[in-house]
Length: 258
Image (cartoon, rainbow, N blue to C red; front, side, top):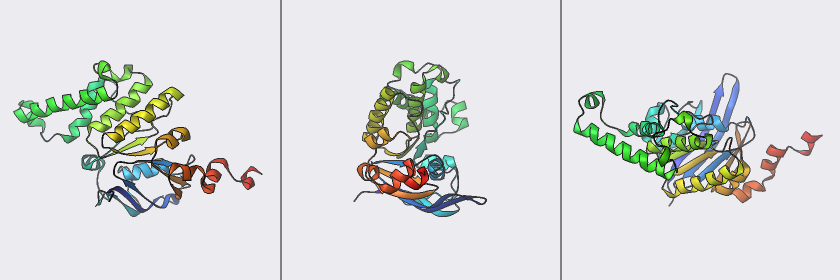
């Protein structure tokens, strides 16, 4: 039986009088790529933020590996096994590519400031393991030769890949990618599709928000569609492609056109 990694159960989120999410439910199974799509303003990023602890739902529950995330802080959710990237890249631009990835790995370290100050063996061991892990992830991303370059000097595409590597360094089971293809040309999008599949093949479960439908249809195992904060469809890519409600949400109805 396939294990449910994440369960979004009847989640509603309200900001004052505005309902941003309205009774949204879906699951993500272990080892799958699930895409969350919808027109602008559909509630995709809001749902993403509820999942990663930025917002606390007004009603409903988000469970990770059967454990409720309600009341948890973002760093606690990261340590539990959920990592994310951002629509607007958030790297430490004055740090090298290697240092950026090592920072991600620091979330798994058990030693504290005193161990670092006195250079205790456990701290040195964790630092070496963090270095080795960071270099392995940079190799995976094709960034090994740029390890010592400042993040600010990397190309836009390399910065995107570096942010994914940093998220992976936290040791997540669920990797949440927020519009990773934003600003990419067609060739870069094709390479990103292959990268996301490689990430899944390494044992990660992936939650993806993306506007590019060609990429979504080419990489997702299942798709959840939101419109005005409500779930209007869920299914396999081919089912979503031919769903009348989804077509109407993206293209409008005859009444809208008139």
